[in-house]
Amino acid sequence: MPHPRRFRRSLAAVLLAALPLALAGCGAGKKAETLRIKPDTPATSLGSLLIQNVVLLTGPLGGGGPLAVTGSIYNGGGAPDQIQRISVNELPLPAEIVPAPSHPELRVLPMQTLQLGGPGNTTAVVPNVADLVRSGDTRRVTFTFAREGEATLWVPVLAARSYYAGYGPLAS
Image (tube, rainbow, N blue to C red):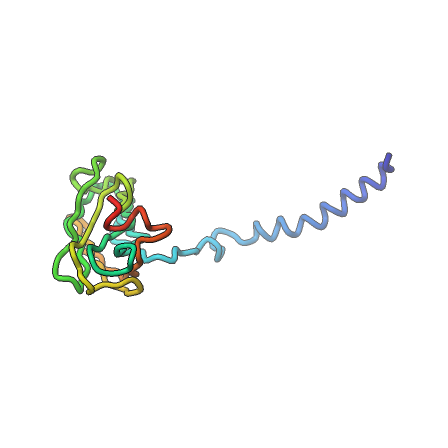
């Protein structure tokens, strides 16, 4: 059985070694750089709306056919807002928006998120874009809302493969 004095000394040494590590984490404060992590997908805010994780998806082969707009819209305000239009600025037609059963009026309710793309969610698809948009491109996308107005952001174009396979224009 170990000697009690030796055990206490060992415990004290371990605590003294761990104490600076614990205090260093607390010293970062409320403005730590790790709290400023931004997503690597386009995001913007428009009044009380936060538009984030926006990606344009082509078919799985990377071009031609329809183009899906995916992402999420969060309403942090106290009043609902409604999506009126989503357009890819270099294309002649706006996206055809088909509401999900849970959001039949395309409204973004207060303190809730409207998800674009994916099974059971609202879909926004630009019909046949031929070869005007290819995987690897970047395009300007404009979201128009009834209350908050317009927000435009640059969005990457990706093929609906791998992670995005269930979100592409042919997924529904």
